[in-house]
Image 1 (cartoon, rainbow, N blue to C red):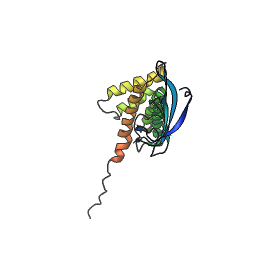
Image 2: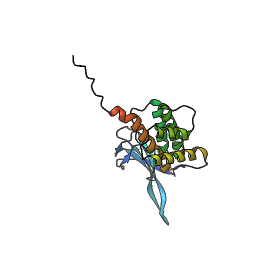
Image 3: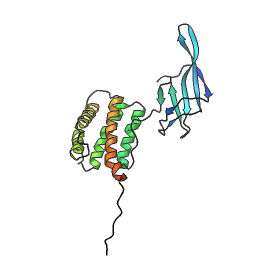
Image 4: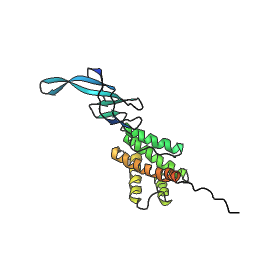
Length: 205
């Protein structure tokens, strides 16, 4: 992304609705700034047009930058946060999601690949194994749904492509892997914590 053209910033009281990349809330704000510059809108006509905006989230109060009405910085991470996940596993999951917010999809795939290996080790898999062995451990230990073999094959293929081949991953690749990881995190860590614990019964004297 290069420098903005010559223009000027001015405050604005009306902006558009968007999802904040910081707090994740869908919001609309009345506080921000617009950047206008001269552009040729049709042959022979130069007009002032809005090139960029800065919009303040009314909930977390952080600024989001938009250029040409499309590029959003920071972007919105793919996936949702998952509670009750161990810190070392959660940190990698959050890192993978943050990569997608900056369109770093190959880095997101590699981080998700590492995340799946950490999950397997946290669940009892031996250390110093390769990625395929960890994916097979998760599948063979019952952590993947019975009809999820296609997912396992897909994740294994994408993970190996990102790590061993000269190929760039795209948003769809990252979305698939993060969706798979999110499903595992909810199934392994979140849902068991949401099951109500039955009160202990005392023996009848």
